[in-house]
Amino acid sequence: MSCPTLVVVTILLQVTLVENLDCFTGRLDFGLMFAECSSSINYCVKATSIDPECGRVIDKGCDMENFCHVS
Image (cartoon, rainbow, N blue to C red; front, side, top):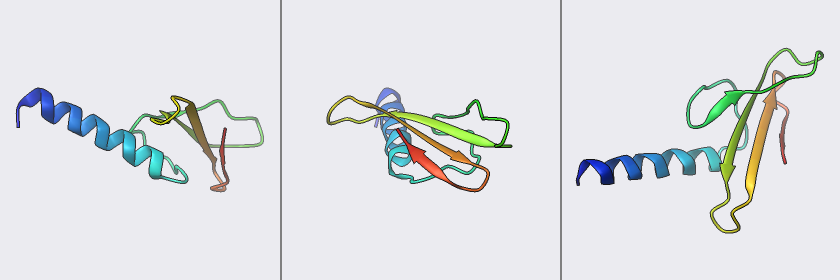
């Protein structure tokens, strides 16, 4: 397997992993990033991925109580 192929496989694996997780609890990897939180939430994480079937952008977020929403 050549280096460019390995990079593509690694990126696809990371995107698939993000799309299959229901909730994020603080990892800063696989496209996760800190999101703006309201003053009542002390911590939250947001991830953005693209649905490969319809091209829709999916945002997933999780607050410190592990309550998650998908928009």
